[in-house]
Every structure is written in C-alpha cells, then in structure tokens.
Image 1 (cartoon, rainbow, N blue to C red):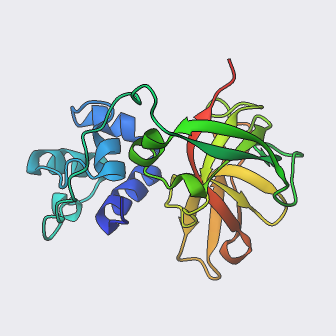
Image 2: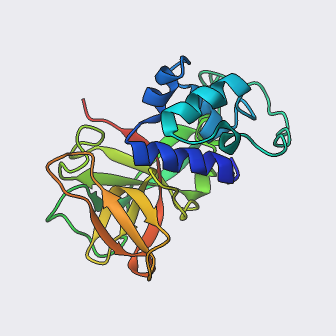
Length: 228
C-alpha cells in the first residue's frame, strides 16, 4: 500500500521498543496478524479508539498520536482474493540471478550477473498477495548465517526491485559499500550525514551502520523460499 506516515510511525515505535508486529498484536488482545494487516495492507483503515489506547500504553505515547486526523480514503475494491490459484491460472517467469546476497560476513558480491534460472509463479499470487509487479521481481540466493533463523544459507529471496526506499524494520537487499547483503534496515535520518543501521537476525552479529548515500538499495525482500 502507499506510504502512510502514521503507519510508519507505529512501525518505528515498535522497532524502538524491540517488539514485532505479532508480539504487539497479542499484547493488545488481537490476533497475531492484526497489526501486520493494518500496517502492510491497510485493513482496518484506521485503528479503533480502544486499540489505539491500548497500543499507546504499550508504546509509551498518546493515543491521539496513533489515530489519523482524517480517516484514510477507502481503497478501490479488488476482486475477491483466492487462497490458491485456480487450475490453469497464468504463470509468470521470475529470473534468478547468478549472484548471491550475502547473509553473513565473507560472502560478498560486486554486481548482478546473468540470469541462471527461472521460477514460474502464479501471477495472481504475486499481484494480490505480494502486491508487486512481476516484472520488478528477481530471485537471489542467500549465503551465510547472519540472518538465521529467518533466512538460512541457500534460501532463495524474492526481491522487489521497485521498492528501494525501505522503512525501519523492513528487510532489504542492498550494497552497503563493501558487498551485497540482506539486512533489516533502520533509518537514522537525524544523523548528519544521514546513515542507515543494518541489523542481522542472528545475535552473534553486531549491527553496523553505513552512509545512506553509499548504500545502494537493490530492493525489498517480499518472500523467502526455505530449503527443507
């Protein structure tokens, strides 16, 4: 969905508190996916007064800071989403590039290489579930263990090249000045010059920062394909 300053503020506050969307949803008495649906998909369009009050107490702010001054405009109705593509649904080819996103130290790559394979995925799933244009997607292979347990060595990452302005807490593939990495991004806009702090999921790896102008954001990680 389009950028919403209030939703981004909630994401930033959760990040500062060290809370995931799932944990915060449970803390306010909602289903595990409630805040994910609200922030990522705009459902519901606005937080109810009770939810805003409870969430504000959790985040240490005023409830009024978590409510829109005006209710967001209703999004155009889409066709009813299917849980699975119907038989014979059109597939689209997503190129897998011959370059690996390093999810740990020592596995660095200098540039995108040639296409090495193609993944055929249902177009409806990409557009409706991933909210992405199939032509903007690429598949990359992860290396290393710094994003364990979220991403393991050899997992594939479905990356949306059209999403190059990640919000705090989002996972992105980027060139950090030394190599191509996949990290959770924390934006530090008040530093001069602006910097990004890059976080691993594995606690054995310390966060580090780089200049925002030096970080080339390749794209946002939409899905991961795990090895069994």
